[in-house]
Image (tube, rainbow, N blue to C red):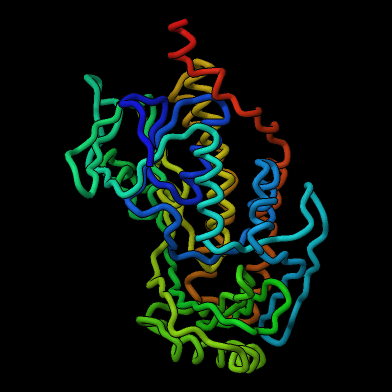
Length: 400
């Protein structure tokens, strides 16, 4: 909505969870930041909504969890896993400063992050499409070219351009970010929002080619999803979702049948996971732009918030601290990949729906173990500085 200059320390392309969080953190450390997005502020998007403990820890550390709670997001204090003939219930115990999980609608979470970024001094442009990057004499990325819906192109200079623009990232394409890993499995998901559904926290049901679940969210609604092979989900819809529910868990299907159904569902057709090269001369990628795993993991939002801080701290070291850009950004990707590698592998195996009832318990144990290192890293990060807009950037300090 506001745009005050034509040169910034950082331009962030994409104002969803990863982009807005990155912009917020950069501004809190005193950098000048412009965030651009082709969508409108607060628009909805495909999402599983569920935050794992790592994501809740981040919001708590940043002082934003209270806003999520104040928006009426219900606390989740119990997670139930069902597979074959077993049902395992886990009570969420207080640790790292949080005592519950949350699954905010994206129309709640994204605006909270965007508003926090704006309050911290981030300039914003919504409804603009990035069409190119600006390159210097050495081919380093030095900014972006964006086109508003009604007006001439805008050129903005930046020390670093961050692509936070999703799995089909325009920035990744423009800078030639190569794929370093590609998954072998992909599940399709169809989901909708039921009201008056009796549920108790997160519910995950894993059956071959019929994984389903319930995620309580805002406004008294519960996100009910069905995940299976793309051929089974097809174009999705209520009939498909009910069919997969019946095959997955007759008990859950009966409860859902007794609740108030939505008019329709939203569907993700499936896409293999990927890991892209996520840094280069003057650019970096964060969120799904750099690292995407199947939504059946329900870990995308948590990883987005994790990587936003890993990247933001790396960029601050470069712009403010004068550290070597290539070394620091390579370190960002190395840390991200070390925390993500095991998770990527196990999610890829689960997403392919190639497992049996006897194999899924071990895969779920591996999924849980893959999150432990992440929690320790996040809990060890330093606290955020106070609002540092008065401190200034490296360029502004040098001019004094």
